[in-house]
Length: 242
Image 1 (cartoon, one colour):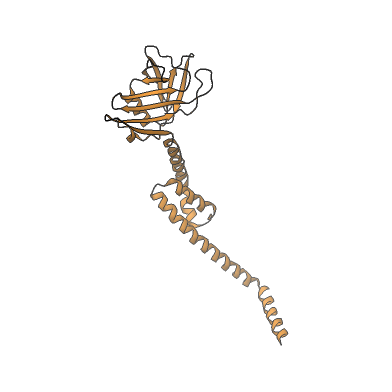
Image 2 (tube, rainbow, N blue to C red):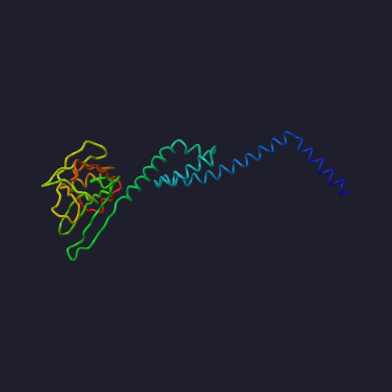
């Protein structure tokens, strides 16, 4: 009896499998269920994408948008966000670059006895320069507000020296624009290889407004050198200058 029941079950199974229409309907139902599940998951990711866009969290929005267009391609949610995703990627690139430039700056606040606090904001040049034949070395730009020595902006070399007897001029360009001459002077000391730029307030204003400033300065070894500072990430509140 048992063998007869098994045989009958097998026969019915084979009959069902041999029905093309039944197979097609079963396949369609399975595909529809899978697509519905994919759409539901895509909707969840799209909600996170929309939240990130609303908050202008562009890097997170890019992550969720990329997931939609890759893993959930073909869903309604992916089709909805695709037209504006190029702008989100551009905003993400800008945000990442801004964070990188913010990290280029260093800020310090040091108490100076009972006289107050010395504030400084400094940044190194984008590339090292060889100013005396000893090889490329960093060039630093420093803005300093001292309670006794007041406000200054100056370049600092690690080797070599500036050529600025009795005063000189540097050429300052903003974002690759036309250079402007600014007066400079080198203090009569060997304690540090520094050259001060006289109009420190104007230079600070340029640094706050520009993505990058370049300064061409004369060197003792002969000729000039040009250093580029990516200033676009400066925190202006760190130096209370107008």
